[in-house]
Image 1 (spheres, protein in one colour):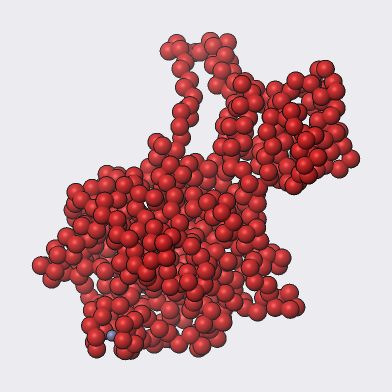
Image 2 (image 1 turned 180 degrees about the horizontal axis):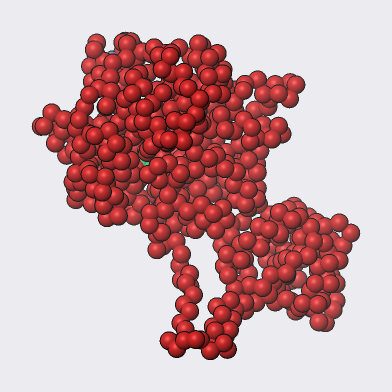
Length: 583
Ligand SMILES: Cc1ncc(COP(=O)(O)O)c(C=O)c1O
Ligand SMILES: [Zn+2]
């Protein structure tokens, strides 16, 4: 058991790791296949000098023993310690990281017609990003190797994570950060006692300089993807997702492949059909795919998910190459994106590794614009209560794109990695009018009328809208979209008859109408509204799940403002139609 585990976990039942040392594992060279026993900090393959080594464990034995042991362990990243490259439990540097929540995105799922949508909430890691996985394992491995100084290059989050864990381990960190990294992030790195070196230039250049600095001073340089600890750390994403998904998924959710004939899944854990992550250097998805592959080898899951790697348009060396079917990445010399966190212009071998995984298990590499990502921040905050940084929102903008392109099917079980917390709230996401200013007279006590008038102005609802839909979930979704905008008085009716009564009594400025409802359906509601002089001119937007026949379309023509298909419109599209109809 790590000696460094915080209080709440140290109080758990006696750890068995002290009694049984972690299983042995070997390092296998990716280039010549040579295999050597693990030694901390091995620089490369002793036979061919390749830097690309991969850790392999006794999967058959672990598949049998691990699930039982896990039942008695705290819910953190180190519960999978036999599969992590730190052997001495006293070396572990922990801040209680891991086992972040896997939350269902019900509102978003409703909006996209994808009911099995889950978010791995990595914002809840100790320093607010998924890079804490890497830092806890890598810094522990450094402590085990007896190192006291380390050099890294980072676009921000890796430096913050390493700085925090190095502080706990008593290791001096030299963090080379690109000048594109926000000043707030740089200050946080410095706060933990690390030396920050700001490099004005690209991230790729920043890496080169950091490496040279380390070489000259004979210091350890963290090689990211070529460091065993870093890749191994990110596997835990897959382990946690598969362990957490099993009890969350309803038996009916079986995605692209069905369960065994008796309706039961043959494995105790469940892998999703899709794993989606925003990508810079590619460490996260490479680790995650290794994790799912190992779980399958251990017999704990029955599939390896399709992988969606999402990049930003202005720095998309992987997705540009993928689109053209290239075997190597198309290096981006000068990244043009405001999302500096994802500015790796030359991903090197990680493209090849990720492409190989996609060729084998399915998936795609895609890119999204900065604007789509900022918009996704706002959508995720107002629809699901999750406030995230731009680099994390890139995954969600990618999700929207993949749903639209039909890559992600309605039955698919999808996990999106929400990689990091808002830092700070981006000005681009909110647009105008996000703040209501309340200016009160200086005199006290306040004149009562003045206060009431000010409060009244604060919540002025200019227009009223009636939602007529027999599905409670659909009403909730539409109400949420309208409410987040702010200024509407909203009425709801749960069938056609109640809808007609509501419209007659409240005389709203707009009706949002479903077509398929029992007894009095949407067509009948529309006929009745148009037949009555009092309601004839109220605009109507139809939101329906029904595939309309040409005759039905004709019937609606001229009677309604717009027709929206349920599950295939985004919040801003509905809002744009609403604003059009009201002006
Ligand atoms: C918040 C966030 N998301 C995504 C990424 C991309 O990570 P990867 O290194 O796995 O490509 C990073 C990298 O720093 C990040 O900080
Ligand atoms: Zn070799």
